[in-house]
Length: 256
Image (tube, rainbow, N blue to C red; front, side, top):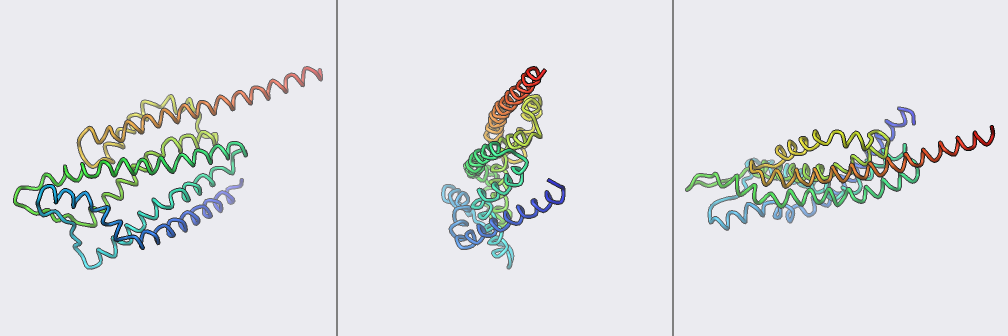
């Protein structure tokens, strides 16, 4: 495919993904109040258990509108995840064979639950993170948490965990496209483990080792699983190529 066609295809896929995101954001706008209630639940639960003043504070006139837009876009990214993932793979698959394209669709079906699983892990860690961070408030003081900073913190964390769990899907996709071989992924496992732990250390909001390992260990296991799938694909390709070459040699010998 010429470069101009690649650019046109990328523009089309990006436009379609944006439209899907906006449609999801409309649903997020409609259900904004229930979403905010769910997002602030860790704070309200802590306030009730500690019997202290712990509330979200909207510090500006335009803050409620700004947050409604951001929460709606966040909900749109979650709801439209199957759609924008499909657009991503649709941009990659034109260079693949028909059989490989169906295999990619299968891995796309795995990508959506992996993305949601990463977000679920982040949500599981959030009460612990909020409790640890707000627990540093001195006795006799009130903690009026900035609503914008708190909600942006949650949304970034959930999306970061979700995207981190997409690592094996991206690895297998690059392998199917013929860009990275399984032995390349396998030879770089030490750097991959280091990268997983560094990412987990940055993405997790608390400084304890449990939260970091909760994200880093699944990422390392997913990396290993992706290397295995890439190795199986490379072996099938090598076997198919070897059989084809052997057929050519036999044909050449017969003709000779």
